[in-house]
Length: 132
Image 1 (cartoon, rainbow, N blue to C red):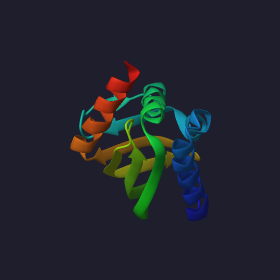
Image 2 (image 1 turned 180 degrees about the horizontal axis):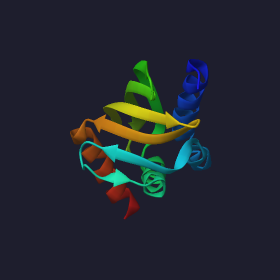
Image 3 (image 1 turned 135 degrees about the vertical axis):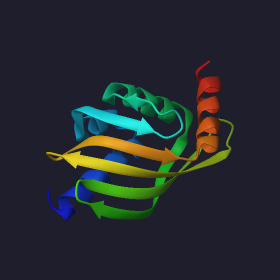
Image 4 (image 1 turned 90 degrees about the horizontal axis):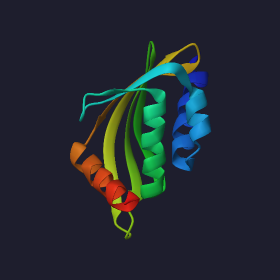
């Protein structure tokens, strides 16, 4: 897969997350993709990750990724970004993160996400309070 197609795939992936377009996110994942986070060390399935993304959208408004840098690797990309949004009640939230996104056969096969666990805990607590 050439660099331009990889950039388009990654751009579509993050745009779909920002828009809450779970069907598009699903279509960009390989069927048995794995998503891992540094703060819980759990490997999520695609469906488990999509549940988290749905919860994120129910809790955080105005979701937006600020791409700090992206580097091409032989099997994907390494991206550093800041996730911005607004919590219920109006508080702004930012989450600094880096992702190693592996691509195989034109789809995302694995993501290793390294994030600021303190800010993720803030989002998680707001999600739990918001859901009841």
